[in-house]
Image (tube, rainbow, N blue to C red; front, side, top):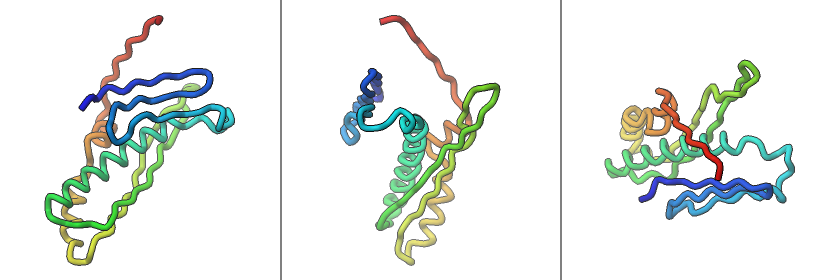
Length: 137
């Protein structure tokens, strides 16, 4: 699978070409949302990525132990702070609930301990190097 994501921003909106067979392209149409309500898309995508990764890892751990859960539901939030006139995401909070039968309660508890962090949440916690290449088209 291709991990390359393409982002195009125009005065009318944006398109994220995920290259992923499940996600396809994500479109943001500025004609449908007023300018005062357009902020926060990056934070929403960041939290969505963390939720998808954590819930997917939990799914894999449960299925590897033959637990047929009913559903995993999660919510998340990115907190923002201002320092020196710049905004930073200071904390990402995920709240996840898993609907399993009583007989699978202990297995779920075990899985929650081993899937404490997934690739995305672990990376956010540890920090990462970011390299930016920008040039004129």
